[in-house]
Length: 458
Image (cartoon, rainbow, N blue to C red; front, top):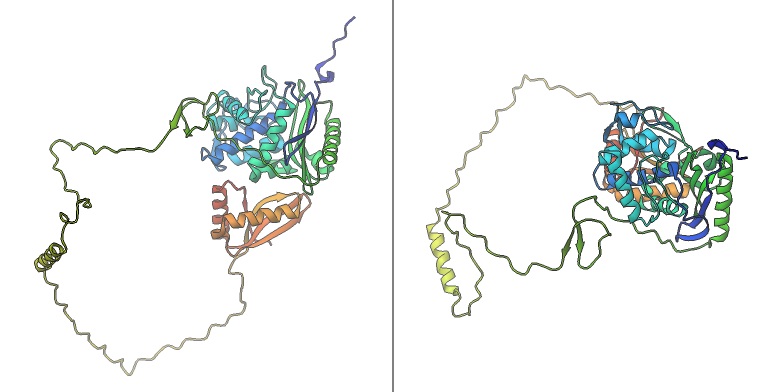
């Protein structure tokens, strides 16, 4: 007698990996190379490609994305976008990272590559460049699809690259909630973020075929650990297992270790040439290669257009001193040129008329002294710029210093201020005018730094 269990109670295969994020050393693994359904862990790659496209200037955070009927029809979890609606890319990124919205993920892919299929191909090329050797993506959201598979090892590698390749966006994953353009959305990982000390990301995933998946990262002092779980039975049991794995990682990781960030890969196009200098090898399957082997040795003089007269060209003489131009010849030529030059015109002096004296019957107006009742020392500098929320005061101060050094011109004279909030520490630049704050934020966004202006406090 066989009993067929419903899909909701069938356990998905379990896999796990723990890694020291600083060095990439694997501290624990179980079934880490088994190809399984990644579910919404897929969106880490969707967001990684989006960050890459912004960095390359293909799209901006403020680009208005038109939502297609296909994207709007994606099943939940979703933001509830409508076909034909236009929304800034930054809100789609927030919705995909925090709420794990499927419609937002599909819209991101279509905005960057034109179609979900083309975007999936770019995801796979990017995965290969990151060393994710056992991953194949078929869509941007991670809903179950034949052949859409990954491993605990590959997803751990991807989480590490998101952390170190695009640190300016990593704070998205630690937000308990965020505004996604149309409404406020809550983080699907908020329980672990609130319960585990040092946790600051990164991405959850769930489908019936996958079970409850999670890639999580936590930082304590100088140590940072990444833990991945596939096939959890529930949100609570998955979070408990991830907490155990993170604890294991902190116990096994050395207190001090050199930071060896992963190598950030270059962009690999679908078609077209990849320029390779010297003998450096291009990624396999990258398309046609243009190999630069050396400098140009000669440059041929172009042929004159028919009917055009040749223009004499003065060339420095390489002849012997006897055949070269003599100094007496140069002096003679100068004398002839000066004699032929027209004489300088004699300047004409126009006499200035003395102004007439003021009539004696004119009464002068007497200026009354201006009374200043209140002196403002701020000059209207009541505005500021926020560059993110961070889990510790140290990280917020570090980001403020780095940002100030990269954008000195527009932030000159501002005050770096860390404000403690219930959800973390806000990194703010204060003491700016409204125009100055707008300018600084625009310039920071051009440098791919997420920011928003802060108005005067009432």
